[in-house]
Image 1 (cartoon, rainbow, N blue to C red):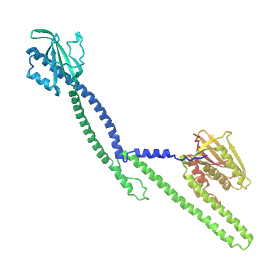
Image 2 (tube, rainbow, N blue to C red; image 1 turned 180 degrees about the vertical axis):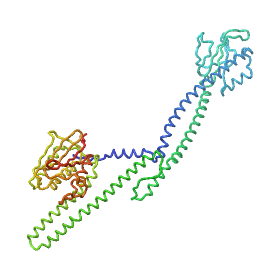
Image 3 (cartoon, one colour; image 1 turned 135 degrees about the horizontal axis):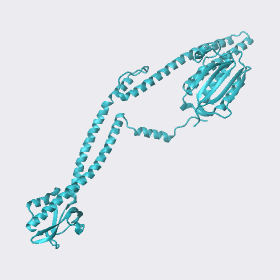
Length: 476
């Protein structure tokens, strides 16, 4: 069952697209984050101002037209429709920035004063609404106009009744007024946004200066300098610095561990390799065929021990690099344990009885099957090597206890003094004088910790038990 996944061309293209979408610098990103809401507010303010300008224009122009209508009817009543006063003419010529047209009709429909051609589209008035001014929009000589019609009961040249006064003006005057208000508002908004954008741009640059100084300080460090960062930084950057310090500490620990591991490995391999070379020379220099055959067997055994040590060193390095995301796969732990114990029972030459105890049902798990097999193998090998001459039975059991899985290897040997438990789990440490590498329990411990578990040792009334305790990681 494969555990790797090939990245598709579509995923690569999507990742490149996401990288291209992001702003090139933190400064540009912060500026965009600040200005985008500001521009949204500016748009809303502009729309509100447009509505407000239209409402204001309607109120101002309607009031001006009504004032002009009152002035016209007053002058017509005084002069009998012959002439308008200079003040009223000025009002009609300049009201709200444009010419105003008018006419006055007598009760019998005869024009008293003003322009003979009325606008088209003036609504008819009910009798009860005649006393109130009526505002309208119509067409005059092909142009859209806005106006007001006012009906008053008055007397002109001896005729009394309801006289109708209509005042209208080109609607473009209102539109120009609204545009002027909007333009002034937009100019003010744009100036404010541009000013704030410059302030934000240079303010962010100034605010990010401590981070740039931190970057320069880190860049000036040598590749061997992994000491914690001690310089003062803003409150918002303390989390980044703390994370970097933790990372430096982890990298420093890994480098130190690898250096120690390499030094120990070189030391451990030095003696076996020297022994192999000596035995090889002894084989060449053997005086007889019988002695040559005997020494060749010794050479083979030494070479096998050296190869086993090399394999365990590689397994130790792999166990240290275990990561659930990269190496864990689904497998049937019950079947795997049975197969592993069968293999080990067939390989062993000693008169050893292997006993397997598992739950009745299959137990599926997500983990590194190869490394768990190596851990169990090393626990069995440890029991065979260090259990003493009296070891005749090894029991391997696996069971689930709540949210944990326990893999136990028990022997009926003489056990180990508890004061040596910690030493036994250390790398390259040998409690008894055997030919072992001192890596068996260390590998099992590293595998357990790589699965976020632990390795426990304990003495039994008649024997010794090493137990891998792993968190139960069910299949997705």
